[in-house]
Length: 276
Image 1 (cartoon, rainbow, N blue to C red):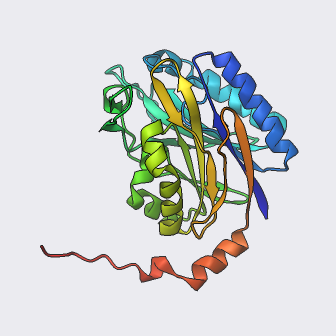
Image 2: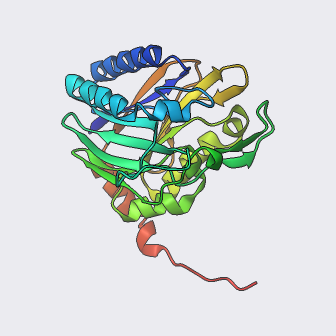
Image 3: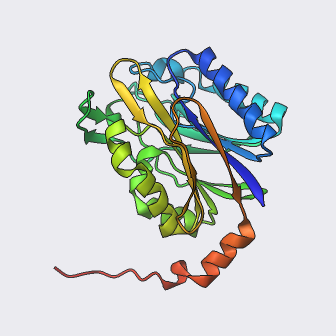
């Protein structure tokens, strides 16, 4: 059995203050005996309109996180960072950036996932509408990172609404799905916990949802409620407190294999074309 930590943060635009919280949470996670810690979306800097400016420091932040992973000997799923270049190194010329989630071992960065699904929606909150595609370029590659305790399928926030991605990650060997997020208060209250459980039920993977919580500036409010499910879709733990929080939950690969063997969903799956 392995212990896995999932973080809740209230990140602001002060990068050094955010990193101070990051290190404190890593220390707590390590004290709990965890092998992995998952951070939320925008955990290094949560500031509207500063994506490109923050992205220019992507490699600096990556190095700092690699150093922390090595120092504390813990795997890190580095929530999301804005990045000005694609996985092949080519620059994004139109001023947009990519939303990148890194999986980092104590030795190196092991995997990079660029968020595929962009949040272009109308929400009944103080912001009103969101158009991520105006500022972000979508990724197009599904990524599974291999670790000593199980394979991690990397997802980000809005990706949770698309079961096809979770199923594809499962088909490529994922045991755990990570979901760094910054759900709006409105959509999070309606769907956050439901989506964590639904994707776990679909894929028979353990799901780790690391969330932003609270106010970020005067307009943006996120739902929080960092949570984790087991491979049956049951909630293992979810936080209802505000601000920086940490939950640590068990993951048992042998138990997951029993769950999958007793209800072999992937073998039973039939793709059917329905006529109107």
